[in-house]
Length: 494
Image (cartoon, rainbow, N blue to C red; front, top):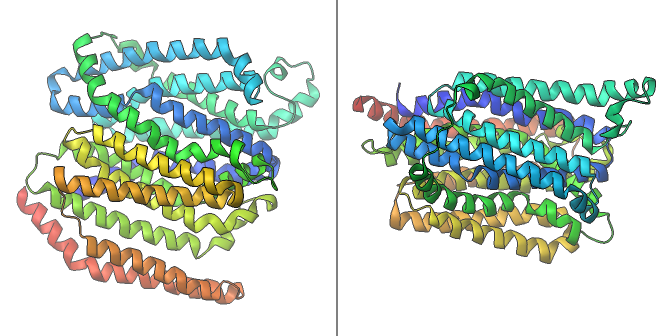
């Protein structure tokens, strides 16, 4: 199987689970935005942003470190895994103890329930510990088992959400003395979202019990030091990177416009972000498959040309998804509760920002493959600084419009810096002309579609469908011969 076909195949398999995980958020948006007020949904969004930030800290970048050294020193893969899992077990346990001890103090300062903060601690500890077991499945080329475990976790979260939101309130009416009322209120609030996530994390942990029992938990200080030297820069770089993705949701508390409560702004913004699901899904599933692929193929002849082709096809497909969403934005808006639909105008900016994030990940492979991960720190810190600057200056005036724009500008700056550095340290012959053409074609067709935005649906949707078909035909015709050339060239290497 040639390289691009293998990458596409594994992308699809990993995507089965990744699609499910992201689709949960999408699937429950109609429920959350109809049962919860924008302010209450905003509270959930704030804590979920903190979860995303702390996951980077508590995994220490060890997933990527494990991939790197397990491929480089295959005879030590077992000891590498046991060292990594031992460290994550101890560090996650310490984190739980600290949060439980400090939950009352944190609760008083933030206005969140202490119980809900404890839910967050347990979610983080379990997910960070099981992350290395999921990573080992990827390293061992077991995408189907990875997908099955992720799917079980996903389905359990679906079940727990349905149980909590639709069954439990009625059960509480019949059992007003239930012990569960010590942890959650009788009517759904944002704590129900956190509890569903926690219960699904426990299911995930149970799935790995046979593997955990078999783990010898040996610890090699020498390998641990080597892993940390490589991984900590990635963690430090990953922290501002993930902060760049989520810091706006934290800053709403401090910089939202005075005319609208910050929780309402955050709730509306968070709901609209979920409508970018198809692009975020594709970027996530691509990342799962691409990282092991890039590392395992790094020594192959002329592999940089393959990396360049991957980037071009990635962008071409992302722009197709972009058009597929913005052309039918009115239909996607019906997914949201009425209180949330005022934020739909910001959707195109959010979509483009997600595409640029995917491009940034593609570019990041140059410093991972060349083991110059320190540059990741400079790039992501610059991106974070741009995001914070735009949010602090413009969010008090423009609210979530500034938040979405800050990501787009920030990722653009990161792409430019990363590309310029890659030319010096690990040059890859990206087809910049084709990339520009695909962006120009997509944005041009989007601009044409705006001419009919006030027309009736029976006019607007057929026109947009025709424009989408034009883009698809354009890409297929432009790349047909080039794709064939790539496949022939790769087959000749075998």
